[in-house]
Amino acid sequence: MTGIPCANPGKKNTPYVIDLRSDTVTLPTPEMRRAMAEAEVGDDVYGEDPTINKLEQRAAEIFGREAAIFVPTGSMGNQIAIKLHTQPGQEIICEARGHIYNYEMAMLSWFSGCVVRPLQAPNGLMSWDLVEPWIAPSIYYRAQTGLISLENTHNMAGGTCLTAEQTDEICERAHERGIPVHMDGARIFNAAAAMNTTVERLTRNCDSVMFCLSKGLGAPVGSMLVGSRKFVERARAVRKALGGGMRQAGILAAAGLIALEDGPRLLKQDHENAKFMAEALARISGIKLDPATVQTNILIFDVSGTGMDTAEMAKRMAERNVLCSGVNPRIMRFVTHRDISRADCQRALEAVEAACGRGAAVSS
Image 1 (tube, helix red, strand yellow):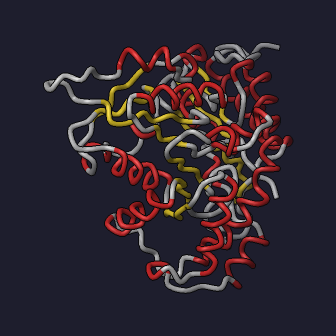
Image 2: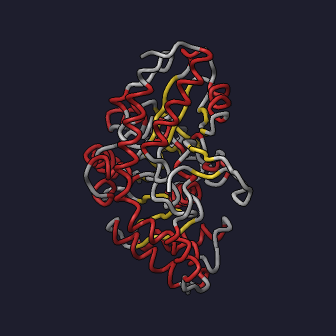
């Protein structure tokens, strides 16, 4: 399957749409739908859903951890971890474009009573040299550093990847100071695929890791939070407080299991498609993108040179049945995924050229 039907799939002559807005738009496969229909279920709040239990056990095994917990969304997983790692009035160090800072509704302030100490890192990649100067000194009138949050891959930096060594150094130095480290690993399997390593190796020194089943791995719903057994026991109580007790959720976990086992092997194709698009976009007059920065399935590029803002470009693309969205008026974001083929990428590039042809010259 490639491309995505427009809304209202029961309507005749539904246009074929190429959706590059996110890898969250992937549709469940027929295998996932069958597994969901046939899933053995129970009440997960009582710990009695066998399919949920199997998914949590498997996630913990893959990450080399004692335990894992299924949550409805990645944001909930991140916020549970922040709540457990911090105390009200503390600071959280993260990259300035980080998801927990920009796209989770200031929940770390609402729910955990913390503030962010944002750091601007080259290509979104944090290092100990950048982090260390911003760790608060032990002075009673300074908010203390309660947590360091990393993001791998880094969404708004264009899907860039932290290496295992970079993460290890931050974790080791932070732990020497008694500071925990959380990994927002929404797309950590993309990072592992790009660097030919395992998610266990990339995250082994982090105190907790959140990863999404519903992005590149292709499940319709759900994320996982992994860590120590004690951490996950505490996380279960916080999940319930946030309304995350989902009862017979094995219907969702059944698709998540397939995503977890089969999804990772397909990610390199998404990366190849993104690099193919990056090379072509860089040749279009008015678009600013360095293809060498594209490591995974996310392309972040500047369209200001085309004479359009991102809203206008997205509108012109939608007229050609290609969906995309802007980060801000200058910066556009494309995301490749399982439901986007190489032919879809080519068609999307033709739509970009046509859209730019109205407001800027297209280079040969």
